[in-house]
Length: 314
Ligand SMILES: Cc1ncc(C[n+]2csc(CCOP(=O)(O)OP(=O)(O)O)c2C)c(N)n1
Ligand SMILES: [Mg+2]
Picture 1 (cartoon, rainbow, N blue to C red):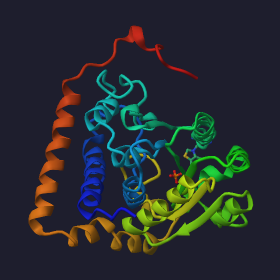
Picture 2 (tube, helix red, strand yellow; picture 1 turned 30 degrees about the vertical axis):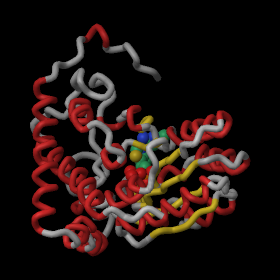
Picture 3 (cartoon, helix red, strand yellow; picture 1 turned 45 degrees about the vertical axis):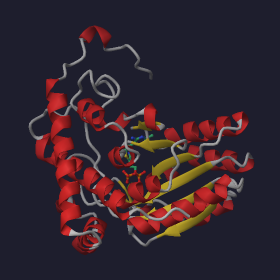
Picture 4 (cartoon, rainbow, N blue to C red; picture 1 turned 120 degrees about the horizontal axis):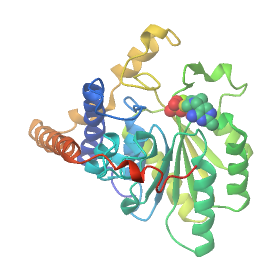
């Protein structure tokens, strides 16, 4: 097993956290042209899973995808220009925060439509197997995605054909403001996946290293031909479902639930494992890269209205 790289984990985690904090800072200026779904509080999953991946593995995600994109080392300038709606964005500014992609790092797509990337990811895994290609497909999704029928059809197909796919369920317990207990009788997603023949485990350690270990072990099994797997990662979303704000005033969850998660911030845990000098070096490097990406996006132009329907599919 390749060793968990603390420095790289901290670097990616800090990059994601600071990028989203910058989004919060800038959102009121209206320079960011699309809705944003922040991953703050959930970053450990994306970082842990991404560190366990090989270059040829292929990632699909959803609208809460900044962390997945950045942990996969998607192009930072292009992500920011995409948020700004500019032509130097990953999709010439027409896709926005909810539809990021960077094929140069096998980050295929994210989608605003809940569950829609799941059959696509399964189809890709089917093609991988058919062509005898090596990469494993990673499919991130939320706990709300499993409320849709197509989710279970996809799992059924994946297990029937023994496909090379790892489902990563980011279980933050809520679909918007509705708790799992109000949506499903059996709230163990991993238990239900097992019933479909997808070998699944629950990871509630909350640390990047726990998610890394779980992903690494599952990927190893998949590489050995042991079929699709799922890790159900328990986590907490710190900010509102959508937008840059907080959501305590809505009172759909207790302050304690949120405060306990915030107290357990794995970014601070990773930071404490490095020297002050190492942390400063990484922070400065990341802060500069983000400032450069923002300058790059400011300088870029909006697409011409004549291309508004080009390369847009519905
Ligand atoms: C097909 C579809 N139905 C409903 C919505 C509205 N919607 C957007 S996000 C969301 C909740 C999804 O929750 P979950 O999968 O747990 O992801 P999280 O937002 O918690 O990361 C819903 C119902 C949508 N975008 N697409
Ligand atoms: Mg959720």
